[in-house]
Length: 114
Image 1 (cartoon, rainbow, N blue to C red):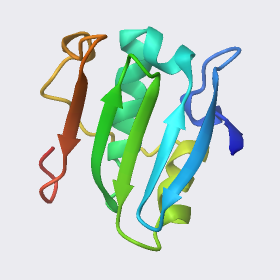
Image 2: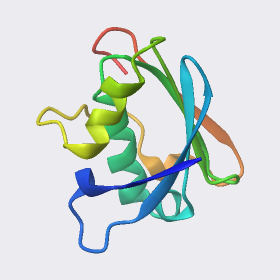
Image 3: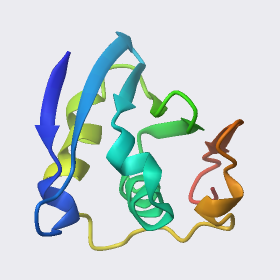
């Protein structure tokens, strides 16, 4: 398990998160700090979904995890979004507070539509 500093989010004392690679096309982000606040979760989702290689993101607030599925072999391209915040972040149609604490919620990409 590796730990990345969330520099891309440019907040003082930014939260840290762990990354667990679970397959050639997916990884899991863990970190209660990113899932405890709706605004931090929204930023995490927007930065993650800004990577064109990301196919889906599943939020599990109970387990404090976000599973990211991406195109095989594109781990480095996706990880770059966390180091340097992309200029064009997608808008979310669902507010993070709608991702209830006891349920899993998935976001899927269809081209530029999320």
